[in-house]
Amino acid sequence: MVLKLYGSRRFACTRRVGVVLHEKKVPFEFIEVDWQNGEHKSPAYLDKQPFGQIPYIDDGGLILYESRAICAYIATKYPNQGTVLIPTQLKANALYLQAASIEVSQFNDPAEKAVLEVMKKRAQGKTPDKAVYDIHIARLRTILEVYDKILGKQRYLAGDDITLADLYHLPYGCALTDIGSSIMEEMPNVGRWFKDISSRPSWQKVKDGVTSTAKCSICPR
Amino acid sequence: MVFKVYGAWTVCTHRVLCVLKEKDVPYELTIIDFSVGEHKSPGFLAKQPYGQTPYIDDDGFILYESRAICHYIAMKYADRGPQLVPTELRADALYQQASSVEYSHFNEHAVAAATAVIYRPVYFNLPADPVAFDAAIGKLSAMFDVYDVTLGKQKYIAGDEFTLADIHHLPYMSILSVETGTNVIATKPNVDRWFKDISSRPSWKAVLEEQKLAQGK
Image 1: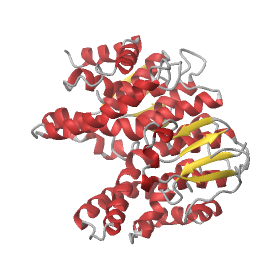
Image 2: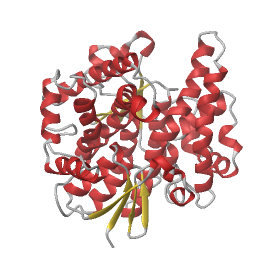
Image 3: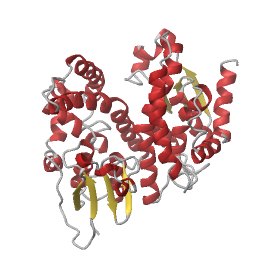
């Protein structure tokens, strides 16, 4: 039975799962959730994702939500298919979890807030608040200055091999560039690293929106 | 060489100490002096470049981010004490999911609540912010409504076994319950049952006792 990804094709968290599915060469059917009409708050949806958030997967009856948990599940279920994305050796695994934790605790919040300040205001036909935007970018810059030191000594965030921790940065990292920020290119090592991960074929396949790579013709929606 | 923890008597260090005690791993705790900016000193930043606590030194292996440290300890000492990380694929996925909910959603609102009524007056000499507190508690209440349904079907947050996902919640659940004056946990029967269970574990009681002794209270 083909894995089903319920999401919104251009949402950051949906594309985060999409890039990992492609990296691990796992076929999937993509189903667009009609969030603009509140589908994610419907009883049927809440039965699967009780926090009313996007995305979730249905893998042969296993329902899973939280994009990074889904990514870790896929990488764990298919350890040797496609790219190895979670190190198994004890210390290498710990350094991967350290990097993945920093993405959530330090990178995601200012990146997401900067992106949403601009995108939401523009969608409403309003001017983004520059003072608010600048605060988030300044926070992000402080974090990326540390990244730049780390990436001056190793190729990726957890060591010399790519891991999920690197891929998690793609959706908001690229969105920052899309809204006109050059922060992901400003520093030499961060720039080198981000160009590397954002040019991977797996990201190219989802960066403009996730689409199905397989169809489950006998399964109900 | 003994396991070294460099931390403070705060949430993130509590998490790590709780796991060390669950696994019965001896350790040496060094308290970092924030009041003199020790966490921003070159010596500290050489180990933890974000200037935060805790970090560990396990015979020369340096690691930071409390949840990463907790997982490292659980895996290194997998052969002793409770199994805090599931090994079976489906159980592990549900553990990852519960951990992610804690990290990406619970933590943010818990921090906001604690900041509004504890950290603002205690650390920043600012008045408490009851409006921000009520907003954070409102968000937590909605989250706990979901938790209450889950915990009505299973004993712990990721399933019927105690995992790191429960420990990750413990420090802020404790602060909310004991120090902020909210009864939001008590109003959700299954969440309340779960919290009473995990906070009565000897490991957690030992962490609080150690802090009491260290601070001469």
